[in-house]
Image (cartoon, rainbow, N blue to C red; front, side):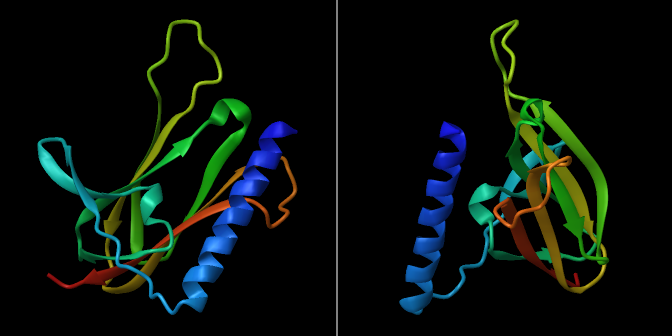
Length: 149
């Protein structure tokens, strides 16, 4: 009960901030993917701070999206990719915790290839699969402009 009030308060604050930005005439900033090392190569990654932003990725380039997740509570990300994006892998890794500690969250990482040039989208909803969709779920989305090399 206390946790849902916190989420409601954060959601209300987020909506209020979005309205302030809209009214003040601010435009959407482009996401700046952060290079992260992977298998000896650098890969661009989008995180929770890039929610709602746009980014450019060169065609046939791999990139990652990393979001916090805690499946021990039943909450998991349900991701959707537009047809021009190809999912290579989806991996969950629990955060470090003392031995025997339960309920520890972690990070969900999707590795994606930008296959088709043009505007593409990654979107995800954080929810429990057995609960009805209410419209109050946490959502995440980034717009990817796949540019030819």
